[in-house]
Length: 304
Image 1 (cartoon, one colour):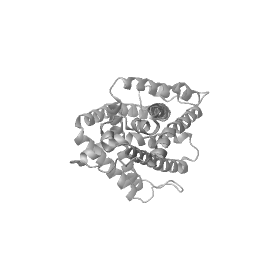
Image 2 (image 1 turned 90 degrees about the vertical axis):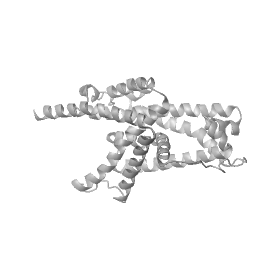
Image 3 (image 1 turned 135 degrees about the vertical axis):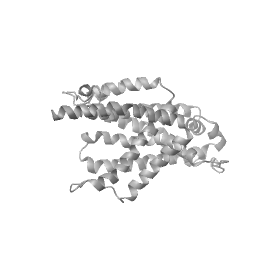
C-alpha cells in the first residue's frame, strides 16, 4: 500500500506521513498529559548505577538516535521543496527540538507513573504506563500508537531513502543506474527506486532483529553524518559561496560540536560493540569498489 501510494504521487506519501504523525502523537500526548499530573509518587527518585563507562554511555546514545533519524531524511527531498535553502534549516531545527521535548516529557511521565524497578524490568514501559493510567485498555491504546508510528516510519523511510539511489542513478554511480535514475514520465515519482527500496526492506526483515538492524543502520549513518559535518570546514576553506547561500550559524563552533559528538558516538560504539561495528564498516566498504568503478565509467562516457 505504501509503495503504491508513493509511486502514484509524492503528495500522497506526504499525506500519509502527516496522518501517521498525528496518529502516533495522540497516545503519547495522552500519557504525557495524564502522567505528569498523576498523583502517583515519582519513580525517578533513585536513578543511579554502580558504574558507567563513557563507551557505554555512547552506545546508549546510539540506541536513542534512531528516534531522531528523520531529520536527515527531509534533505533527500530538497529537490521537491520550495525554497529549500530557507525551508530545510527551519524544518530540521524545529523538528528535532520538538521531538526532543516530546520524548523528554514522555519519559518523565513514565517515571512519574511507574517505579524505577518496574521500568528497568519491563520490555514495554510505555504500555505499562498506559495500563496504569487508563486501565486494561491502555495497553491496546499504546499498541495502536506503536503500529501507527511503525507505519509512518516505514512510509517516511521509503519516501525519502528512494531519492538517494534515484539521484545516484541519474549520475551513473550505481549498477543499473539507468533503471534506478528513471523518473516516471507521467507521475513524476522515482518509481523504480521506490520499488528497489521496498525489495531491500523485505530482505532486511530476515537479516536480524529490529534492534540489531537499527543499531547497525545508525552506526553506519553516523559515519557519513560526521564526514558530512566535517565537510563544512572543507567547503568554507576551498569554496567561495555565492551571495545569499546558506551559512552555518556560529561557525566554527557549530560544526566542531557536530564532528566531536559524532566521533564520540562512533568510537564508543566500536569499543562497546566491536563485532557489530566491524560488520557495519565492512558492509560500507563493500560498496566502495562498485561506487568508484561506476563513477569512473560514468566519467569516461561523459568525456566521450
